[in-house]
Amino acid sequence: MRSSLSPAVAAATLLSAASVTSAQAQSQFSISSDDAIRTSSSTLAWDMLQYYKGNLTGQTPGILPGPPPAGDYYWWEGGAMWGTLIDYWAWTGDSSYNDEIMQAMLWQTGVNNDYMPHNVTASLGNDDQGFWGMSAMLAAENKFPNPPSDKPQWLALAQAVFNTQASPDRHDSTCGGGLRWQIPFSNNGYNYKNSSLTCPGIANGCFFNLGARLARYTGNTTYSDWAIKTWDWMEMIGFINNETYAIYDGATVGDNCKDINKAEFSYNNGVFAQGAAFMYNYTNGDPVWKDRVEKLVDYGLETFFPNGIAVEISCENVGTCTTDMLTFKGFVHRWYSVVMQIAPFTANKIAPVLKKSAAAAVAQCTGGALGRQCGFKWASGTYDGKTGAGQEMAVLAAASSQLIGHAKPPVTAKNGGTSTGNPDAGAGSDDFQKNTKPITTGDRAGAGILTFLVLGSACGMFGWMSLGV
Image 1 (tube, rainbow, N blue to C red):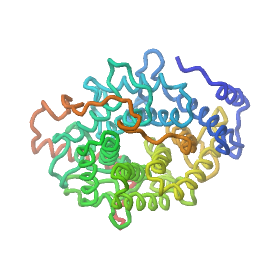
Image 2 (image 1 turned 90 degrees about the horizontal axis):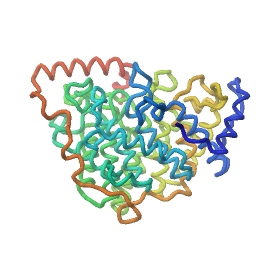
Image 3 (image 1 turned 135 degrees about the vertical axis):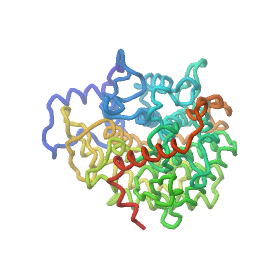
Image 4 (image 1 turned 90 degrees about the vertical axis):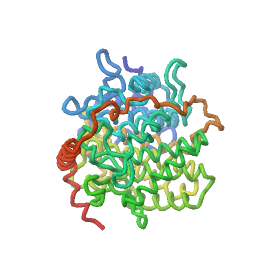
């Protein structure tokens, strides 16, 4: 059964009986005060969870309906949704959905407690696993209620994800290092190394981010060493432009990652900006990391917030955004908000932009049967006629993160953290590359053809960007 409605949500639900039909209708949501933010965020969270069926009899806890063709959503988006709700709880104090978060996050851990459940093997990427790992890390940092003692703990789950991704089985000499998109060698996209999720995945971005956060939480330099190594590789291969600080999508291993797809997406910038901010904080203000944070934030605000409102520049205005891409703006709002906490020198730049963008986000939520559902094109000022879990998630993130000024910064093991870790977590995991036949030339060729086909269909719309400077 779904959680009982709070009085604020119940009142908003009654208001929806008079359905709003005009695209120019007045939004029911506001960020004009802390109380307005909490009330609006409460309703947005409830509306988002109407797309979730995992707490109903006979359904699978933790996931949104999918993957295609069974539904619109891939496995990773469930992990992202729970992370959004963990932040919602931390920022608003509303624990209405904590039971659902707990059930979902524990149900999907897999038999080895490393977020590699066997039922998603066919589409299991390093990026997918990474999102669930970052949500577990968030639970530890925000002091989300700990699981029962006989269940895996948040910090240990995050460490398990990191350890499986740091395993030699995930890194090879192609392109000089880096994670591939997919984990099983037989999966479409195994031949792609990347920084973002557009076509393949945000694999190396999640790994860098998780390493930086684990370093700060635990003080263990193994994690920071990997974060530095990943950043250096990203620059070396050209996925991070060390002059402009643009971050590009990725490339195939067949040409040693020389032909880079230069599509740019907002949350790619955001995941590296947040990771760099954690490294800045962890190193007590190292000027190298301060410079990287500042340049990433400056580039991100200029590029992805034209006129101060979030726009997914590579797909939004040409109508090519996929279901995955409809979530990206919300991640940037959440991650940039935390950047302000742990790298406070950024706050004067970030805060006014996020406020203007959040106001635009909630203003266009005037559609659907309830007359308050959210679209994707925030800058247009009007509901665009399409809604879904991703749109609701993004607006919820933008609205609730406006309370960041009242929130406690992420804790560490020495500064209030209570989650139990396990540095060896994930060591016994089935890596989906072990206990398989050796990879032959034919396997590599087949994987290359499959990668070419899947990237051609999913990413063809962005191919022209590879010609960019």
